[in-house]
Image (tube, rainbow, N blue to C red):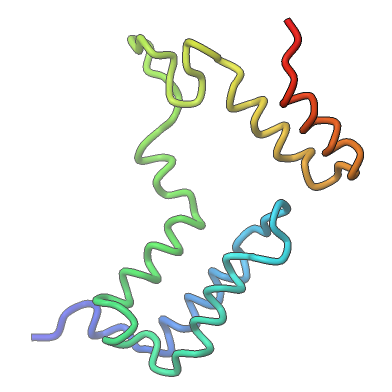
Amino acid sequence: MATKEASITSPALRRTYTAALTHWPKDPLRPTCQLQDVLSKRLAESNKFPGPDGGKNPAAQVNALVSLLGNRYLSKYPTSPAPESATGGMLSPRSNPSYYEDLMRDLDAAPTRSWAQRVGLRLKGMFRWQ
């Protein structure tokens, strides 16, 4: 009796894996260390991937990568608050509702900051005047 995973060929898994890596977004904060570079290196070094030595279930590994790329879990586990929620939802905690918006704004601005701006922000964080 053949399983579904056995019917998927190794070259097909490699093609799906490579296609998912080409669509993976770049990390602007760490331009020298990208996830797709690390995984591509793993794929290039392992001529047997996907195989039994690369993991217990290579089809599940490829499926996990594709599902993360497609935001499959965002629809399954929504981050918006339920109307009866006492906490305000995952992305807007009651103690600081704009925390994640501020964090995303700061992360978007970080790669474009000059050296002086980075030092200024570091000093500002060291000394809190009230």
